[in-house]
Image (tube, rainbow, N blue to C red; front, side):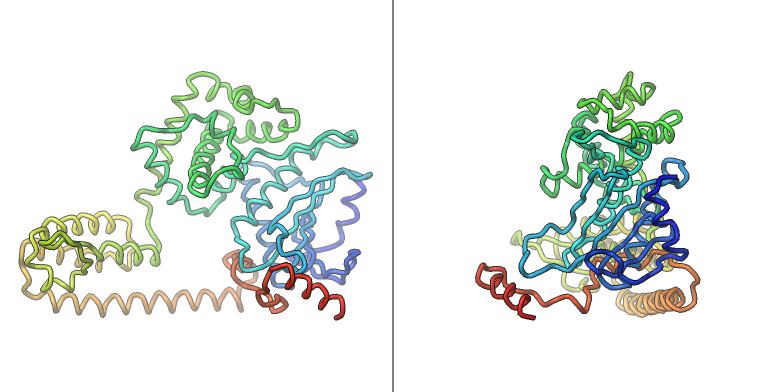
Amino acid sequence: MPAPRKVFLPLATALCLTIAASSAAGKPRSTSTSRQFLVYGAEIKIRGAMCDLAERTKAGLLRLLGLSDDWKTPLVINLDYRAANVPDAPAAQFELSQLGYGLKLQLSFLVDRDIKGRTVERELLRAILVEMMYRQRGNIPAGVPYVTPPDWLVEGMLASQPGRDSDEDAALLRTVVASKKIAPFEDVVRQQRAQLDAPSQQFHAAYSWALVQLLLDAPDGRSRLARFITDLPDAPNDQAADLRVHFPETLGRAAGKWWALSVAQLSARDRYAILGAGKTAAQLDRALRFSIPARDGSAHTYSLGDYETFRKLPAESAVLRQVNQQLLLLEARAHPSYRRIIEEESELAALLARGKTRGVAERLQRLGSYRAAVERQSSQIDDYLNWYEATQSKKMSGAFSPLLENAPSAEEAPPRRRDPISVYLDSIEMETN
């Protein structure tokens, strides 16, 4: 066993064991359950959330690859609050270096309102993959450049994590399938995420998800992908060629056919998956807000309760028939507690499309009361589950790990001006205090 790991073995036996500060900076420290992640700085609840998120990210990656946890190099995670004298410091930074005893991996995050859980997961996943790549490569000569995992691999693994909501990625892939403009996989593996604008990054993430799924579904895909990762430090510059070598059955011949099939299959995924209560309510609200053009060509937004206002408009029947169709499609995916509501709303839309208004007002009022009762009950269930996890559960579910996204610490300073004079005055104030 390498000497560095011996140093970290006794540090923790629970999810996060907080001990006295021992780093040079004197920061408090927490250690994750597997002892691989050493988190410095910030408050204990944020360090605990980071430990939990890091362990869940690693567990999801190992599950995808069918591997056991056999880490060799610890990952130091440094958490800081944004300083007034360094206003432009990056929100996330990954450092990789070779020390006398082996590899050093360090991630630094600025904890503020701008930090996003997905950004943290992305950098954690990148660092975990680097550790896997160099786990069996000791004594690397000085001056040899290090290799980091390609962006498509990080994005694809991130999108494939267990429990990840893939509806948006599937919707994006449906648009490219419908337009018959699927990007070649060679273009996907060569793209760098930092050079893409926000919409292009979303498409790149969806394509990366499709590529990783294609590789995992290949013959002996899990072990081949794991081998591909460990071989990355020796990989040639042509990533597409390297993939063909590792996956000859899928990408060696007829690669375009298999790639298009993977994109098409994932574009249809989750189309009929059951929605949660919150998503069902949101989609129901969108379906029940519709526009009907007036005689002068202007369009106004209505709901079914406005039938006395729009019943004389020429396009009323056609629009209400479309609403009826949308509600029927939504009913197939709706949360069980909303299905009766959607079914009756669909019936009302069909009646109004035929010009029948008898009893509509009473049914709409009854539906409103019933929906309010359903949403009140859902809220009570959520409150109980949150209370149970906070006070009774013996282990963390991970549901509260997004705490990093929107829970600024009490130590966080209020927003400050960033002009040169203000930055200088803030630095003077910090020195005198």
